[in-house]
Length: 248
Ligand SMILES: C[S@@+](CC[C@H](N)C(=O)[O-])C[C@H]1O[C@@H](n2cnc3c(N)ncnc32)[C@H](O)[C@@H]1O
Image (cartoon, rainbow, N blue to C red):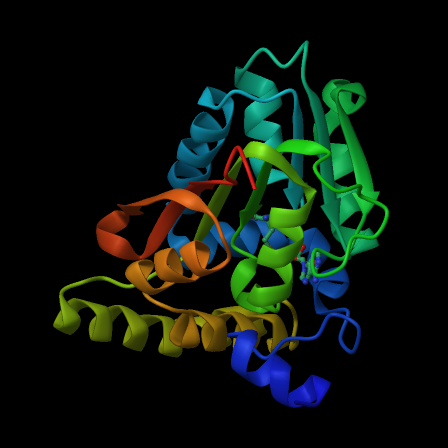
């Protein structure tokens, strides 16, 4: 299968950061746009994810596709991470720049790195105890990201994924998708001064991403065990957790 064909089946948003630095272009407005599209509810989801990460047993965390650092900011602001090492990574230097600025006095508690979550040769096998990725799996090649997460996790290491999901009651899911289809491109276009491309990708990703049950099956197929998920906001998003087996 050629690279393009593979992307279209495994990357729900059909997004390729190497061809479009859209997140670099919207970095300074990304946080405002998150508030607009979710009516601020993304803050609750992210607080929940940060709490889930904090509750896990780990000393080395890698947060993939960290964006402007929404997850790690919550982690370091409310949790004691004194004995923990946190690496937050993204492909967009623009997004990492905002994350660095937002960390402020907590900057020395987090190492920011430019990494492609689909291919991280600089991260050694089994070198982290927890790997998290939020609201980005739908715009990446899932197979590659999950393979890399599995590889870099130590045996017994934890995976935490926040991602768009499905509302099980179909009429409500259809209404939600209609709202997003109407609002996202328009609000995105207005808020970015005419560059709505990020929101076309995200909308496509939301539509094409597997259901919560489907993603759980994919995680198991990748070799993860103890796969579980909890829906948030009726199922608009879900938080999946899983573990790399302790023994091969
Ligand atoms: C929708 S934002 C999510 C950011 C953040 N995790 C959050 O929850 O707000 C998606 C992020 O994924 C990053 N991204 C896209 N493809 C990536 C890849 N292959 N590897 C690493 N980061 C990627 C983008 O640069 C962007 O910062």
